[in-house]
Image (cartoon, rainbow, N blue to C red; front, side):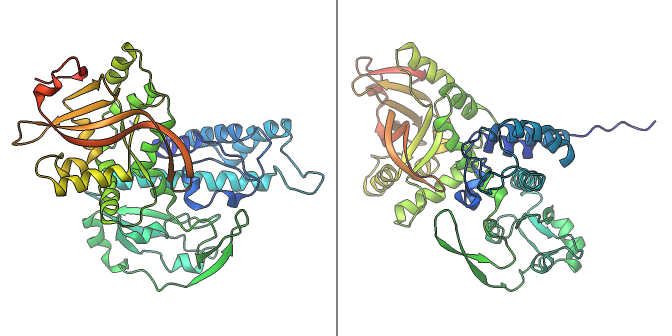
Length: 424
């Protein structure tokens, strides 16, 4: 009896496309969103003024989920675009929708989604499959620079993949393949473990900004980044908690699948740079979110946070970690501070300070009778900066300081009210 096999939807690729679809950004020119920005938003050039992005994103999602062809995609979408006036050329000669443009939209978005989905799998499985192999389609249509990288084999975490990760341009058919140590030994004779010499760079002027950037030869302008890695980074996911409805953000962060450990890994790198005085690319880090019981407890007391997200600023990180180094037992352990996304998850109790209206997250410290505390200000408003976004006004719940506290102090019901957990 021949078993019947049913196709399985590319779940990781669909998740990547869905994440980009949460932010629909109309643009006049494709360079208004540069490189990694496309990992965080969905856009189509010359879409400003037309209500078409949701339609295009919806049809792309359907095509990806069902394995539809370009013909299927275009036949469903074209009538909708024509109805909204986004088809053909404008009176001044600007090309709007066309079969050629739909082909580009279809091809680029599906390839990027598959790349992002693949990278999620690479990260999940890198303990057992720690290698990536660059695979080019070795025919007459392959770019020479891409062909030279065929069979290049490097570790998943090698920074080389930050630039040379397929797709490396429009219509690029290259892919990455994960390998185990055993695979590498079996294929060692055909693999290369050092990249080919750089072909150099060429200068490209970004039309939307006028900036001139260096683009590696062999990579099309706007593609010199890792589309999968950018969309997979835990902090990118965590940042979405800030604008999400509080209840949804709380549920997401409480889910067992929430990437607390990867987020803590990324946070530790960022926080260490902050303390060392190195330059970092964001002023604030999203470390987690209030849990559903905490939100419910606050709501019962007439407090409705605008966001469930919990963040920490550079200055607070610098202050807390320097306090630890300068003090003797007056600050939480440095390991707990450097791993804030995990530390929040193991809080034994959360209390409301009746005097200041702030929350106290408290947790046990090994070989210490006192509890460590993190002080969180509800609905803290700030001007924050982040990659590809610039400076924006953010409302979140900000960790402002940390310290050590006696349990008996927290039991003072005139000063503190238990919201969640236990002090026993």
